[in-house]
Amino acid sequence: MPSPTTVEEYLDALPKDLAVIGRTLQAQFDEALPRADGQMWHGHPVWLAAKTPVAGFKAYPAYVTLLLWRGQDITDPSGRLEAAGSGKLCSVKLRSRSDLDLPLQADWLRQVRELGAA
Image 1 (spheres, rainbow, N blue to C red):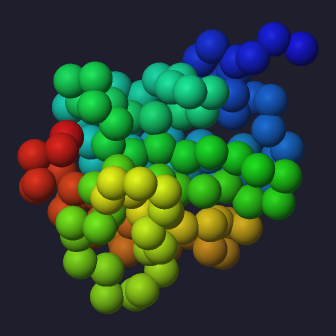
Image 2 (tube, helix red, strand yellow; image 1 turned 60 degrees about the vertical axis):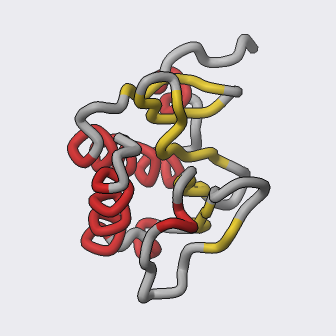
């Protein structure tokens, strides 16, 4: 099976429960990051502003990981964001729709946008 070339193809290939999480994130990123473009980047959906990654997500068999490339530069009173990899990347694992916290995520995205990242 060929790798997906669009965010829609990526989402269509996911199990239903993970696709619901992904589509929710897609809509939230599109709304909150108007200067960023959602596209496939290194095999998963990423929103880039001027070719710089801002936010994205990656599906695994049991969860979807929300990714914020400047996540260590924002305030997270919930403590849910975890440093990930190198640089300032942070992530949070979303195992079901109940793990989505749209107001909290909107605040993270607002902060990222205000940093000038998108």
